Length: 194
Length: 188
Image (cartoon, rainbow over all chains, first blue to last red; front, top):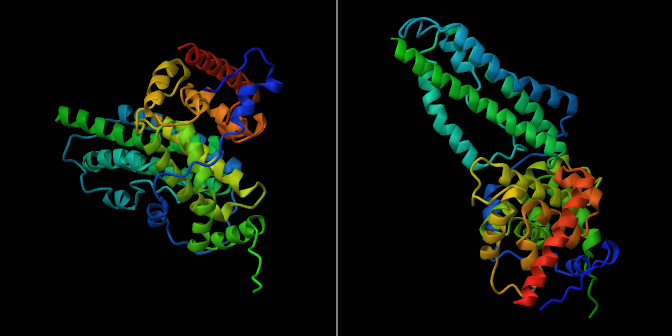
């Protein structure tokens, strides 16, 4: 049993002294390399992309207002009834970044991306039922999010452990989900009106 | 018979890092072999959960591989790798559905304490390890980084994205909680 005397100051704290003697290495119970190597993507050496923190920050801040503006737009302009203008704007949808692509430095978990994939199915169905003007707004917002994701990914390549950049990445991802959710909800409202 | 002296680890690592930056997977495997124990130890101690620690160790090396082109050698490779590991742990805690539903806030420390106590291997030889595992996350993080891995308060604060004063306060709290726990064990 480890005996820890009480009442010492932080400079000679026996707890810290003993903690510092604990082994730093704890080998995993199995070799993790096969699983890791399977996840490594081949990459070609390229000149590191220059990035600018202000650009990443500005892009992230812009994204923060995207879904709020979209909500306002959807509420203000409910659009025509279901069935009108379904074909118009198809080209715009095809060119849209759906889903947003996060670069190799953006470590979003598989569980998070699975959530998005599930929502995306409903989103695609509902989007086709929205009027062209609203669809164009949605696409523009997704393009803003895509640009932000690109800037943040470039910045993460330089500083992968940055809490600020990873926070921006997470909020960008959440904004993307919000857009999908808002379109799905507005589609429900549209269906009720018809 | 005369044999060539083995290349020392200090001299070998920069070369491995340079080769790995250029896409050499074998060199990266060498870096993995050299550092996996410390990275896994860090993840295990910060999460208190063996399966999560394995997942996060994998995530750390995959993220490191992706980020290597941006590594400029301004900090030691091990420090850079640990920053990625700490970030993976913190991201896992922030995730909406945490893989093992580990409590996150200090207010939920009691829950975490109970869970961590159950998750740690009962054969852990050192009571101190178990006392650290039982700490609430914030206090445990700083005890692990500062107490075991020797990072300064400034370095640990940078890794955890906290103020230095917060780190010091968390360390003070960690010491108090550990003393109380070890004292209770001594009494029982």
